[in-house]
Image 1: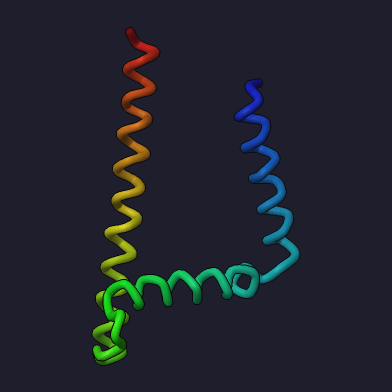
Image 2 (image 1 turned 90 degrees about the vertical axis):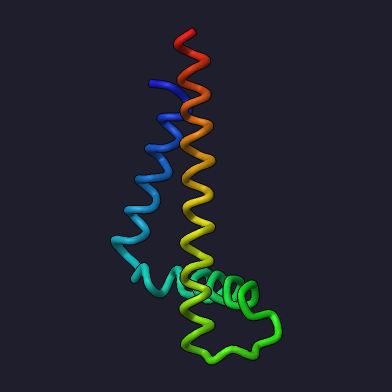
Length: 86
């Protein structure tokens, strides 16, 4: 088993152990709030939008960000696969 796979399994084990003991909504609350504030500030830096509109736009900005990450990840995986095929 490769070192990367062992590390991944250790991380998964630790995460599942932690979530079996603690409420995951509580443990991630600060991070979720900070993430929401980041995207809200991005779409409404002056704070002039209606809160519902700001939240709607922030949700789209977050989705776009996550899709961009997924695209980059897929691209890297495809490049790695191409490098091992040749």
